[in-house]
Length: 164
Image (cartoon, rainbow, N blue to C red):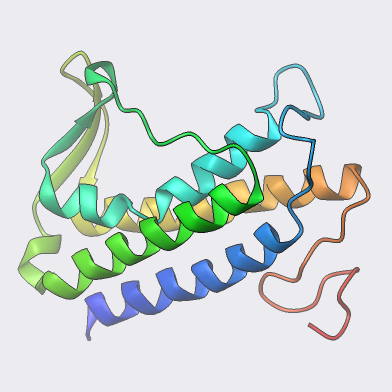
């Protein structure tokens, strides 16, 4: 089994789906949140796009210590998000292309002040990132629905795109 090919294929599928969502990103709604405890629209979308670069981070480090200042680039609108998606996707794919199967075996963790919050193999951490993209993009779909913005299909048609 070619694990790296499967990871690249899945990252590419998620990239293509996320591009469809960015096509519908609304102007002037960056601070929209459906609830006071919800992330603002721009922060949520920025986070989704940032995750596409995580394979590079995961494959080239042993951990991410959030207290050390993890500061993804901040976007201001649709064009910024689209450009950042391209940058992060290319970085993620490049890292996966440069890796070999053994590079997926070591452990990798998310930490806070040196304390491990979560730990996986590097393969598991990359899979977790892919799951995060799916999870947060589903949230984005709910935001779109609440704002009467068309929700693209992700893994087939949506109510707004019955033909895919």
